[in-house]
Structures are given as C-alpha cells and as structure tokens.
Image 1 (cartoon, chains in turn yellow, green):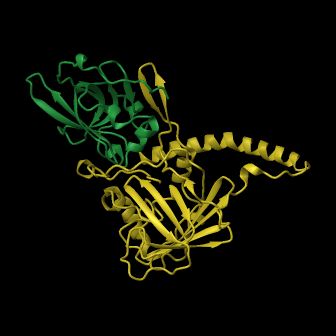
Image 2 (image 1 turned 135 degrees about the vertical axis):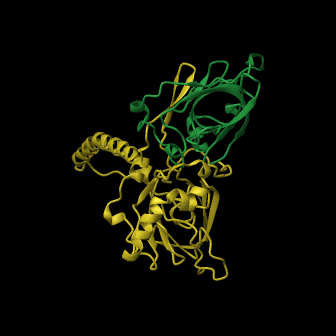
Length: 282
Length: 143
C-alpha cells in the first residue's frame, strides 16, 4: 500500500515536472532574451526591512503539508479531490544522498527496526510534541528588536519558540525539552537560530530517524523578496557520522490565519492489526 | 467553494432511526491501492479496504480532534437496540481545507454514511467515506 502510494506520488511528481520543466525552460529562454534590455529595479521582490534594518520576517509563512488538495461541488455533493500539493510530493520523495542523514554504522540496524516498528515506537504517532526540526518551518514569525518568536499550529498542538537575538548565550538553567533552547543572531541578512538542550523523546522525521540528547540544530532563514529560504543543519555526534543538512525549503506568504490546534488524542493503536504506515511530512 | 448558505437538515425531516447495513460491491481492483492515505496511521492497518457498508443513524457527538475527527453515530436495529458506531475521519486541517467545520457535521443530525468497517470483526468502528444529510447534501471524502 505504502509502495503503491509512493508510486502514485512519484508519477504525479513526474507528470508535474514534465509540465513545469518546459515552462521553466520557456521562462529562462525569455529571461535570456530580455537580458539585453536595461535592468529595472524590481520593487515587487525588494526585501522589506524593519526599523533596525534587518530583513522583516514578520508574517505567516507556512502551512503543514496536506495530500488532499481541493474540493469540488457536484450537485449536492461536496467532493474531496485528490490533487496532491507538489510540495507534499517533494517532501515524501526519496531524498538524494546529499540530504540524507548519515547514521553511525552500528546504529543503522536500530534505524531500520524503528522504521519497521514506527506505528508502535514513533512518539509522533502518539501525539507527543514533534520537536525541532520535525515540526517544520515556522508557521508564523513575530519579530521584535532583540527577539523573534516562531509560532506553530501543529497536528500535535500549539507550539511556540521564543528566540532572543540580543546576543545573550544559551540558558544553562533550563530542563532539556522538545523544542530546546534557542538563541538567534544575524549574519548579514540571514537569521541564524541555534538550538540545543533537547530531550531525546522525539524523532527527527519519519522512518525511524531517532536522535540523542546531544542534538544541536541550526536553522538559517534568509528573506529574499517575498520568500524566505529555510535551511536546517542537524548535528548529533552521538548518532551521526557528520552533520545532516536537510533539504532546503522556500517559504511563501500564507493568507489564512493560524488556527488554534484542537486536542491531539490518539485512539488508533488499539485497533491496528498490522504495522503499515505512510509518510507524515510536515 | 460553494458552501456559503449550505444549511443542515431541518428538524422536521428527522427520519426513523433504523439500522441498515448494506454490503456494497467491493471491487478489489478498484479499492485496493486506489485509496489515497489521509490518515496519520495507514487506514489499511485498521480498516477493511475491500468493504464498504452503509449506516443510518443520528450523530450523537463529534470529536473535533487530531490526528482524526470522530463522529459517533447512534444506529438503531430492528429490535430497537442502539449501537454507537465510532466513525473515524480526516484530521481537522483537511476539513478546513475543504471548507468544512465541526458545526457543518451537525451533532444531532440524522445521516447516512458510507464507511469502511474495522478489521477487528464486530467492532462498531469504521472509516468515513461519505456522509449524506436528509436534505440531500453530502460530503464525499473519496476512497
């Protein structure tokens, strides 16, 4: 089932790419033709800035991925239409090696076992907080001088991260936690968020990707015009042979306000008769 | 999205509650593998992907929760015995994406649902495929 589902996604992604590639090629062609023309300032893509001259990251930037894309009305019936979001397809496609985590050889069997036993072992299946980086990009950002706040309306609940950007160091008095202790600083136009002091009660993603309490996550957010490039590097010297650079994402402004997440209450596990599962990207 | 102005069933059209379970044609070739997976867990782990049944009853409660919304459907059999079915559905964000809300599911409404029954035999638990209200409007969540 999972394999068939993945095949469907790959086919959709392939079909989408067949449509998109010529469009991109055409756009690039016209772009090349236009290079001879005098360059005008592109006001639409100018990066907005706050009063302290940092890029303005305020806004709603991300919604968790959904497979189901749309609804259509047929007579008296509202029908859910399977119109996969290309971002969803991309999120569940096999990662190229450069974006895959490198576990220590002696831990690969554990990852495999955790993957196979996912519906029994994944804390995320039981409504535990997803933690960082599994929670995904910030859904909304509130930026003030000396502090940035990330807000999330997640399947598992409502979460926030308060990130000082006034130069203070990490706290040393906090208990390890799901979202860790974050501090931020600016490197040019990029906000760098450095987070440590995690507990080990989360996975990094689906498929058995566990971590240890040595987890250290660095997120880089670069606003470019109307988008934010979101890049994540995950360090965990206890389980990885080298830092894991996750596949980068481009965030775009979202028009819908964040909804308060309803309670997450797991009721399925007692009714499941096998271990089948599927990707759950955020 | 043409949902504005959609009403719920009028109280005066309350139907006689009775159990009507009908096993529908279950074409394996159509059902197996064709189902997009909406659920946090695989629906195939919990529900019989080869069967569809129809239940008629009254929505006694809606649990607006994640990772799944649940409807509780009171279904009365020919002897008047009421069985409460737990009807599992999509996460709340899917409903929002379709323009549907908890209120639109209509606690207290008489409805007919097409569902996949649980693999645990005899358990009044099912996966929601389609829900139809007495005035004819329906929400079809697909296979």
